[in-house]
Image (spheres, rainbow over the protein chains, first blue to last red):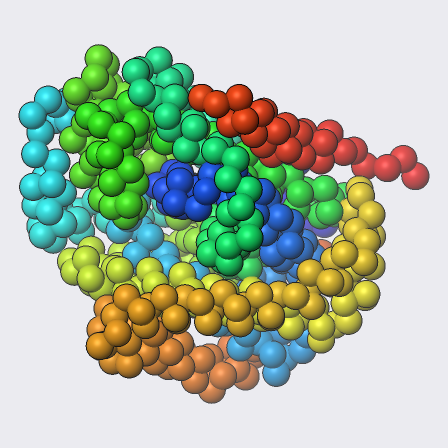
Length: 490
Length: 31
């Protein structure tokens, strides 16, 4: 067996770390907005189904690949489906690392607003729009807080699996739940807040007949749980031999969905509680992730009793949620570097320094960050397809049998149908995103140098795809295994 | 809140958190 310190100490430790990975800023600032815009109760039904069809099977696939190969994304694909397919794992790894570069910047934004909340700067009369725009247009500030974010993440990762990752998530994840519960209770005591719950739970079941509800539900499920990113694969490398895959996949998907629901029950009543009118609240919910969080809520928080204090708690929840997700992204990079023979310390320092340097463009130019968010966010759907391909290649029934040998529950034939559905879901979701982007920018959708054009996505994907395919053998031959004493087959 | 919205809230909380509790309580089968 490998050293105990390179494994999670318990099932709870593994699940909390996985939930920290899954629950990020998007659960707090995107989920409530998407629910509100998609018929509330109808979206909640579609969302749980999307989780069961897309997220749970992908979590199982990632876990079996990580647990059976004991290698990061690159090595896992090499050993699971053969050397010539290593590039798929490299794509998945790079896609996630490219997200890490700007996600650290976003985590820095949340840390900045946490400091504003703690120092009492969020007070009545605050010009939140000028504050936000001033912050974004000050590279010294955005780069400094990006540095703090990646520095904190690197420091925690340096501590190792148990004393770094696991310990941090054991503190962070329960804290997020408590903080969101406090914000929810505080908001619900305010006049008008209950309208937020009405928005969340209004039973417009006719919404289930709308394609938009399902497309948004599957998009949210794909991003929210983090299935298909390679992150779950990374954390599964540190699972103990006796640890379960089947039940744990459901636990992580339901825990992430439940936490999103809690976030919805905190944020929507909060928006209605702080808004001067119902119209203002509904308009705020259409103002985008950062518009809602950093401009709208920041402006109206102080107008209510104890609002400045609750603002600090809210931004603390946002900052630590983003940090826990950033930790998993750094760990993915560190594991892949460790697999080529680097020590954990050296790999962490290299990953953190590169993330800091390559995150600077996103910290300096907000349109660059928006561009990267779209390109690699949608690119993750391709990663999901690669995981499904790995299962086809190895044999769907064969992989299901491997999962069942490692599960406390029986995974039935439904798994096969979900795996078969993943490429079709990708085509539908990707087509929809391209169509949306084209309709938002009808004059520039073909221009690869425009921030949100479909052409910029295709061009950047093509460049990365060409690089990873060309470097396939180089990547495959570089991989060693620091965990060689683990059995290679389950 | 309307009665239907309250019923939907209870249903969703039962589904989301019930699923979590059900799978979290699963234990390794005895050999």
